[in-house]
Image (cartoon, rainbow, N blue to C red):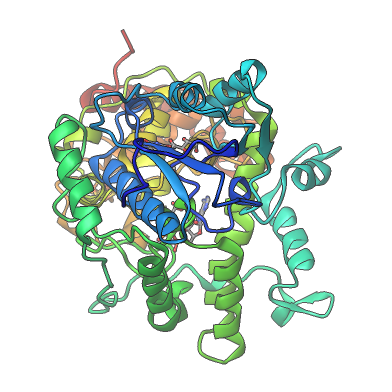
Length: 524
Ligand code: FAD
Ligand code: DLZ
Ligand code: SF4
């Protein structure tokens, strides 16, 4: 560990190489051509990154633990690491200031950086590159399957960007799940088979969680001490913080869980945070797991006859399709994307999103698992909290802030298109073709939440009725001018027309009363 500090670093005129907290991959482009005899890797734990939103305690502990472990890994390879810890008294607490400090201390001949995942920090690094006293080489992040150029070429000239068509291109280009030029099994997408409700008595398998090693324990203790007012618990920390630990989780998932991933992909159950999901987003986003490699390994499981096509295709689509697609959209549309508010949503986020204190059993469960694990699975994020935020008309900035704060896998490039795009339609239809608005009936069909809820999922109006029901028609009526021409909403708008004006007014009033009851009040 001697070299992984800011002391006593040799004075050779090599290249300074920046490695950010989500760039923890052996094959990182910033490390290409590294000369261990002359070069230095800079890694810095800084308050700016931990607090630009007040991340969940587990997110910070995860990042610091993974960064420290990666520094040790480099050290083992004989690489000199200038590692600035969060409690270092000289820490300037910003990445750019740490770059200045490192360059002032030593005569490097160049700086190598892998492009940054978030626009916010990428802008600062680009500005720094413009004034730095050494040449700055900002390299492509080759850990993604689709490059920025490739995505731009695909998107060019299209009036609509649809994940499904992008995904087909990615399948063709990678050859994954292909049978010559045709998709394996004759179909590109087997989602229709992936909407089963959890049958009574069936429970998900026990999942492998990672016991924090000594490095992670140290990071957890530091976070408890230095970020006590951040959201979330640290007790249940079980995320892999090294590539080896992540590999154990991936292997366990591929062998034991993937075969049922498809069937129950959209199901939710009270007190079951993991269901049949992969629990790998934190590891992929940090760089501990390679996304293309996971897809190829999932295909091997299918080819060996150990998992059905609907499961494997569904899983691969999330990574090869959705993950790459949202990253492409983000970089194509940012920074304008960050201020999109197509539905003119203007309400504050109700406090129960943080406290979990609500009689809505579904929301209480999602907030609870989120606080305990810094995790909720996709359908919980989309159809419970996301759907509710949209129906309530919560301002997209407040929605983004919540999602960025509470999840251990949150990075703006993936969070924002999911939140502003998929979940709340604030982007006006760039990511999805229609809002995923749903009443309580959807949640009732896909979960066991409603049985244990104070609200009545069958009732449409009144104080005791399920709030999702009370809000649903009012949401459509409120946004009639913005959504009526959406062909995919033709049916509900026809129904609304048939209700007649009096009833439409009553539904609007019902939704307003529900918004007030739930604390979705105007932002002051
Ligand atoms: P699985 O269900 O096992 O899926 C496998 C992998 O596919 C994931 O690890 C992830 O890498 C990828 N994936 C799945 N769905 C998506 C998607 N919609 N977009 C991008 N990648 C996907 N994911 C993040 O990584 N960070 C976020 O900040 C984030 N915010 C989200 C916000 C909202 C409102 C919604 C609806 C989804 C969000 N997602 C985000 C996507 C998805 O919910 C998580 O990737 C997933 O829950 C992670 O758990 P898992 O590894 O068990 O996923
Ligand atoms: C998420 C995160 C946190 C909490 N802390 C740090 C840090 O102290 N130092 C660092 O280099 N990176 C950190 N990160 C990850 C960055 O926020 C991430 O690299 C950018 O947001 C770009 O995706
Ligand atoms: Fe959620 Fe409504 Fe069901 Fe209650 S009744 S759990 S609020 S969907």
